[in-house]
Amino acid sequence: MLRPREVVPGVSMFPVRTPTLPPATHTNTYALGREEVLLVEPATPYEDERREWLAWARGREGRVVGVLATHHHVDHASAAGAFARALAVPLLAHPSTVERLTDLDGVTVRALSDGEKLVLGHASYRVLHTPGHAPGHVCLWNAAQKTLIAGDMVANGSTILIPPDDGGDMADYIAQLERLLDLGATTLLPAHGEPIDDPHAVLTYYVKHRRMREEKVRAAFVRLFAEFGRAPELHELVPLAYDDTPAHLHLIAAAAAEAHLVKLRREGRLDP
Ligand SMILES: [Zn+2]
Image 1 (cartoon, protein in one colour):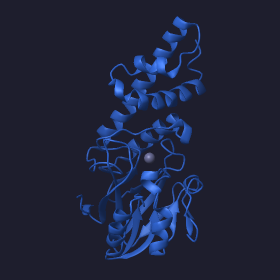
Image 2 (spheres, rainbow, N blue to C red; image 1 turned 30 degrees about the horizontal axis):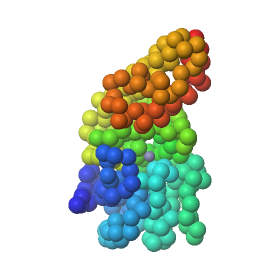
Image 3 (tube, protein in one colour; image 1 turned 90 degrees about the horizontal axis):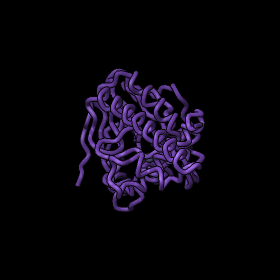
Image 4 (tube, rainbow, N blue to C red; image 1 turned 60 degrees about the vertical axis):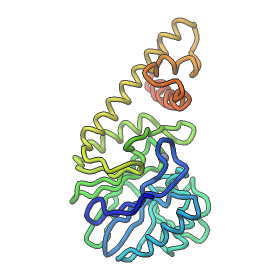
């Protein structure tokens, strides 16, 4: 059983079990602040986990002032309404997240916007709107501690999907990774996996890896187009563009390939 622990001074982490993308099995929730506490990721749909989480939330030393969802995915926000009601606090989320959530009856919603500052006693966090993985995705930046609450921008030990059929956008995602790189963070606190203490290396790898994949998707498209005299289907393109990825992951790879194709098409880079 994963127990809550303080990962950075004033930041406590509680991983809860969620229906997330394997091999991950949990979503990290965070309590930010001491005197005033903001709870990030109302994540779990499971009753037993919800009970434990609420006991943890109510046991905080400071006053709980809100619940924040980094984005609308089920492994991040499925308890958004339930937790906000149970704790009688507002839900904080980007408007593009709020419009995708259900079960918000009786909940006060505070819409977040890029650049706004959240003050929690002695701590303060800057809201960064970082679309790409999801349209309303936000990160929280603590400049004093050079620590970023990273949501699903990066994960430790699993992959980040960019689902084009659910508001994912590869161009936005890569642009936002580059923006995060510019922060000069020393710690990234992802929603899945352990804290990341070499953000520069990890973010650089993410950007490089996505650009490498984009080039492979483009090359495969161009080659198959020439061969077939028509645009290739995803199932024809994936084995070529992901020839370094095990075949059982090709279904997931197809969604990523689609996201790359959308970006390439928009940039006019699939024209022969
Ligand atoms: Zn997600």
